[in-house]
Length: 96
Image 1 (cartoon, one colour):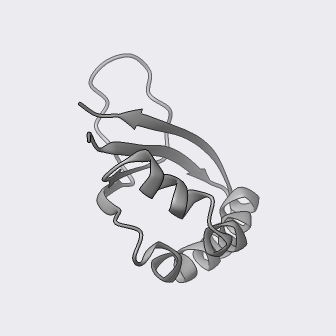
Image 2 (spheres, rainbow, N blue to C red):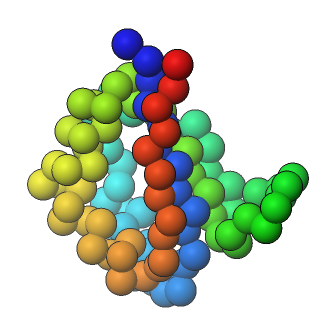
């Protein structure tokens, strides 16, 4: 079964509130089968006009594993801090 990738571009407006999200993230992410592949606050644009902000790329073994994290009660409790502290463009990309 192919992997899936969660990709997010995050424009942080309240670093203090965003830090509350980060402080609880590892616990909410543990045991999901996901792997954080990259976090980059200054990605290098190659084509087009990419959105500014932090880029995060996470791989999951399949969509069920992604959903078990993203829809979990533990993640829902902390994601409110990210929503309040930033604007995010997120994608779920299916691999081959």
